[in-house]
Length: 103
Image (cartoon, rainbow, N blue to C red):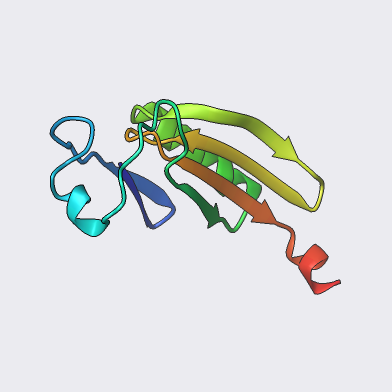
């Protein structure tokens, strides 16, 4: 699954892989691919421009078939939420208050 932002909208592209891991994905690494239902193969983080954008991205991913990973976390200066994509990869989506970074 890929999320692409276009004019404040997110388009979800589903990529189907034959079996648990595509023959194409095996050409990107010499290492064994893991079972993403049991292990974290990759953890990706995306930074958004606002809390609302974090919510929009996670809700879009869930609506497209992703699964909730961790409940939203509000630390005041930073807000994040996460999901698992269709391949079981963990995506952290976060926003940090620019005033906190400038301090």
